[in-house]
Length: 78
Image 1 (cartoon, rainbow, N blue to C red):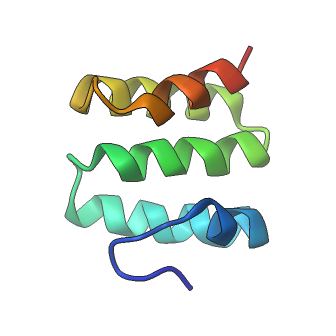
Image 2 (image 1 turned 135 degrees about the vertical axis):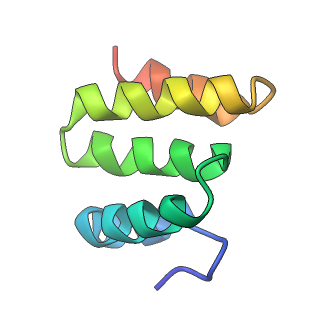
């Protein structure tokens, strides 16, 4: 399982559904964490939930426009 504040790609790759559930729980406690929205977008991409992925990538960009990974996640959707 991911550390309390860390959700690396490898954790998400291993079990995207489990990672999505963990990220949902984490975001309930900290809904302003751009990195977690970005990682949740990745989980959604792996699960083919593209609309949800786009929403999370957009939210991450709004929260932290300087986070380059948000643009990569958005680019994966096209």
